[in-house]
Image 1 (cartoon, rainbow over the protein chains, first blue to last red):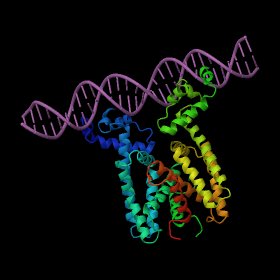
Image 2: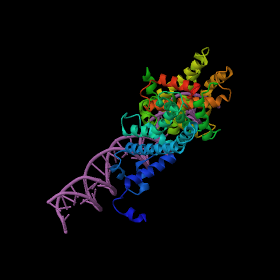
Image 3: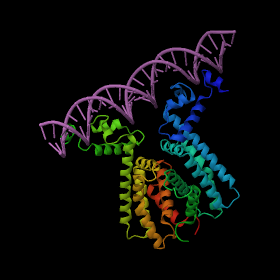
Image 4: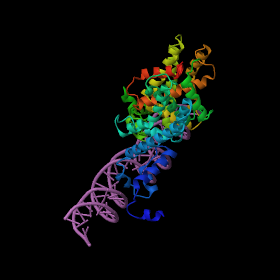
Amino acid sequence: MTDVAERRYHHGNLREALLDRAAAIVAERGAADLSLREIARDVGVSHAAPRRHFPDRQALLDALALHGFERLGAELAAAARAGGRSAFRTRLRRCAAAYVRFATQDAALLELMFAGKHREPDGPLHDAADAAFATVVAVIAAGQEAGELRPGDPAEAAMVLFATLQGLASMLTGGMLDGTTPEAAVRTSVDALLDGLRPR
Amino acid sequence: MTDVAERRYHHGNLREALLDRAAAIVAERGAADLSLREIARDVGVSHAAPRRHFPDRQALLDALALHGFERLGAELAAAARAGGRSAFRTRLRRCAAAYVRFATQDAALLELMFAGKHREPDGPLHDAADAAFATVVAVIAAGQEAGELRPGDPAEAAMVLFATLQGLASMLTGGMLDGTTPEAAVRTSVDALLDGLRPR
DNA sequence: ACAGCATTGTTGTCACTAGCTACATTGTCG
DNA sequence: CGACAATGTAGCTAGTGACAACAATGCTGT
């Protein structure tokens, strides 16, 4: 079945094939030893072929990051949708769990997504990031309107929430929380954020 | 003055010189393009000389990470000491600010410290990390005894705190919080964590 | 139908890196 | 003072990213 595709001079879908293979390698071995030549070999193409689609290594990494934001946005949106009629705390936990799941399962990809972002404040990566997080910000805004959260800028509360989840994911992938399950850690963190560490 | 040292066959302090130069390079350009040969050139030694002190690139990175934990621990301890007689909230803010300062000023080093950690659960890096965080855990325990925090495992509260600070630092270095100063972000986060996002 | 052209591959090369082995120099200790 | 361990050097291999020149392919306008 693939014989035909592999034989002809034009691959037909090289860009996608390169991205797929690159994503797999990043997922298993991290972005550091991602080699353009290795990907080209795996896909069955000459070492310089990727150049037509990605002028340099960074361009490929950027494309991976962009795709990552799209996937993350979709998963966060799905989590927000799924808990649409639940209590606010439940919805928020669901979103938080979705984020931490993504961040731990695809830790190297997430690192890539964050690493590339700080270069251009107005690039497509920034827009993609904003879009990805938008649904969760909306959940927070809804919580404020329902009186479940203190009123204020939803972006500020979202900042604290994402910071916590991002750090939690860091610690999980770093092996610093081997004693607990990710689910328990997420629950503890979200509850601590909502209720506060002080006695009420 | 350095003429003598540079001329003789034995460098005299090559290991330290290599670490210093490596730390500087990591700080300015990140750990990714740290080249043993470049460091050797900069220090004025042949390209294979570092091998006597660091068998491979990773060994040098590990040494850098270890040194980083020692510095971080010292700064956290200093922050905890400085606010010794202040109100609990003030002491905690001070520690938080110290951590975020370290994490943002030496972002690449911190990444290195966390990245290397998940390989050996009982290695020297783990011990160094525990030691670095110990003083802040002690501050939290003191807060619990003083009734400023809900009673419980101080390590659990510390987990949420460090997760938040770690994530905050990520977002700051990622350029996602350009609108606010680091100090303001730290204050907002610590207060949110103590008081909770819910109305009281 | 087909000539011309942009696209998308290929091969070849350069400069660089990490890691290795063999060898040279130095300081130290018996 | 001679042997030896520590520490440095030179040279090699294999792999990489970037680039340039060239070849195959398929599309497009006449």
